[in-house]
Image 1 (cartoon, rainbow, N blue to C red):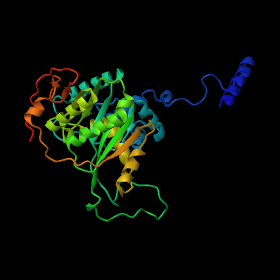
Image 2 (image 1 turned 180 degrees about the horizontal axis):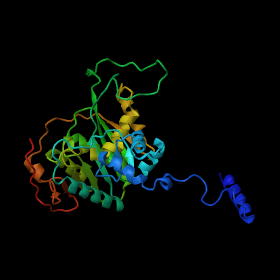
Image 3 (image 1 turned 90 degrees about the vertical axis):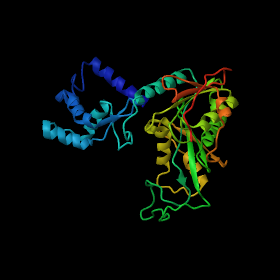
Image 4 (image 1 turned 90 degrees about the horizontal axis):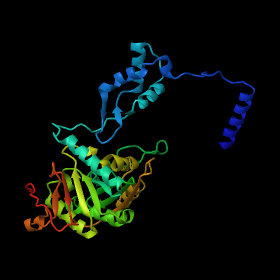
Length: 365
């Protein structure tokens, strides 16, 4: 490449000395905008009604076909463009072609939704800028272990489709697994604790603890606090006393204040762990039956992306009890500080100070 560039420069110097040019100034093919100066305005008008976006991202998405846009340009304006040219213009406008995405909330959105998004974004940015760890956590859907069909396709020889069981009846001796994911926003890394028992708050915090022991304490040796973002429900729900109590035990163990923010109800798809870790795990194992737990571990651990995502997966054979209760005395011992104005969603397990603000939780039954 350097040799070619050097040759081009030498040729250019010779031509300039002889006042000769291979092509006149301004020669060559013109950009589409030269012939149609308002092409971007027209295309934006076509797709703006079908656009949607993620409040956590700057990227805008559209589900309009590039060929349909090209056909509409010709039928309504007489502008004939190839769909690939349309695609370049669309991407230049900040759009990206996507399949349907589960982003619309079923029911009336919470009135404080956008404010909470902004709070989470601002706090995560602040933590990352000063080098403090930020993680997004959640449990991926439980997966049956066995030779069952897994959605998606894989490359195989013609006529050699993989044969799987015709019904997805659970096999008791194989059971299910619950992958609890931790996505670290600081460095695009994932950690999955693969549970073989129940998905409880105790399991959720144990997963975070394993991430810290395996990855966090080595990656962030000077950390003084940890920011955890998670959904409002499930094993890390904001109403769960056991979730907060177990976080308190973890905070004491690792010596860090733990800051927690929950995404509003019905907005779990905005959680980073969903679209930066879980979706790529699903893509990596598509079409491959999860015949045993080691296969699941191998497939999760081999997940990567063009942005160099790396994932560690460990097996958790602990047994987690369902409906485990926390006494009022134990709960009231938690040094938990609410962060206004949305104190139910944002709070700190503050082990670095001896005093704390009393917290009154919602009834948890």
